[in-house]
Image (cartoon, rainbow, N blue to C red; front, side):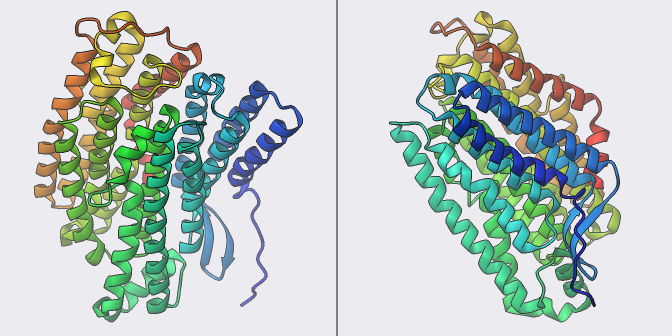
Length: 487
């Protein structure tokens, strides 16, 4: 077997564009030293990454860094979807960051560079074909976020949130790496497809205690990234202490990265008989605890953070169907994987719109405040309030928020196809629980007027409008997302 590899640079184009964006941002900040130019370079790079990723994804699956049948880079429809979503999220968060960067307490060059680095990790993550590439990509996505959370000068809350996020994430990474090492000890391979083939060909490996420990460590480490219960405690404190645009990125891009990583190992590497029951338990705990605690929240960002925890449970729910024999048929597995990816895409669009509305309604350097601070906001700013209410209704899964409605229908349909009716019932009950706090917040927006707020920044309103429009469009064409997720 020849070990000389031919590199497919077309397949790597999205990663080149994302990494090149980070380098160009550094150069622009060093040579031009104008905030507007630096932000424009970052935005243009994110847009170019989205376009390049979409174009490469239309040409069918491309593989590179291969030795025999084992490839470390596999770029297909799903990888393109993930890369485009990450690029659009980065573009959206840059728009939301306008008021924060103009306030002057956050260095513009470092902020844009770190966002571009996180984008590079997200693009690579979707195409990772082995555990090493997967973990490196996930950490490239996560490491810049530690700094972004605490980047505001003089913010004690930001420093505390950054430290919390750093400590928990390091523990999660350690668990994942230890699990990967044990998987290599058991199977002698690190490529995802090779691991899956090893467990399929040698069922005796499943009886080894070392295999169970390895699988548990990998799933637990990635569950931290998704903020699944009981690995969720870092999320509310980190979101609440971070600047609002960074909290938006954490709640969307960071969670999407954890979902993509977890889905990659579950779909292609780890045995479903072991991961299925674990994921079913995680899904039930996550959606139930997230919804119950969200009911008691009075701070806006903590409410969105706990609701984000609950949404992670809905994302994991289709994978819980793998616990049953009926959920491990080829059709049921394909439906479960597609439903998890599609729900994640629907969620991040609606979540970004919700955070954009909070940014628009709050002071530039302020936090999310309390629910009472948003009282009557929709009466003072009808369009912003309407978009916020639509995002909340979508997250609740009610019409006219069609994206959220189809997301939950997709999950329930996948569970029923996998003969996991009991888990579909749990999803339905939790969806009803979620109505209480989503509709309460939406009603608060139209209550008697509270404190007068500043006029929303134009760039934030534009970002909110684009995110809302995308959510509406996706709501009318959900099958397009499902088709891409299934590839």
